[in-house]
Length: 227
Image 1 (cartoon, rainbow, N blue to C red):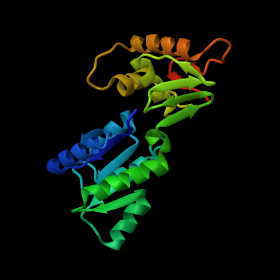
Image 2 (cartoon, rainbow, N blue to C red):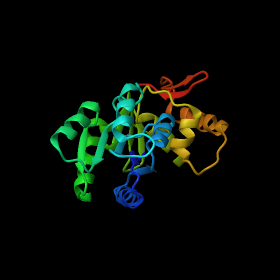
Image 3 (cartoon, rainbow, N blue to C red):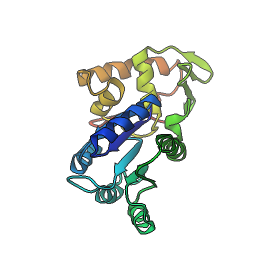
Image 4 (cartoon, one colour):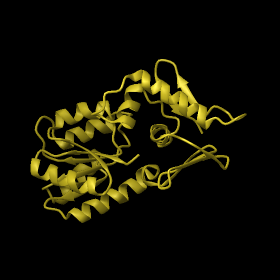
């Protein structure tokens, strides 16, 4: 699963430019134009990294950053802040509020992309690593091979994406709606019961004879994978 980045920028031309360049790097990108709309979107889905403009309609970027740091779900979310304010006092204020890095406008796109890569490497190495490992299960994103205790596991494309999504955050419980969004995408209508069918297929494939069931069902909440 490609790292997901949310860009909150009210200059539409810059938002489009950022989306184009980030998608060209292989990231999944959501764009939001207002601070208040971004706050709602981030309550529904937490990305792997947030690019946040300082000055926004609705809620300022600095206030949104403060609110995100106060929520357990987003207190560790990597945040790069875009600002026309280059003064040291303003950078100190932003860092004190919780921003991880600053990029001053106008900025170099290659420099911003390099900062994004560096921050993802530090904060979420599992989302950019080609090899994921949880317990005795290994998944290679590049070769699309899955092994358990050295034995190859044959998976269909949907089951592979589902396993990859679960393995990106071991132990985290994903609701059916979150799995639908993350594996099937926003624009595809699939009934939530379809998730149960594919989890069943994945469980059957991964749990080879005599091996522990590594996929946990949390009644009323969803699914997780355990190490």
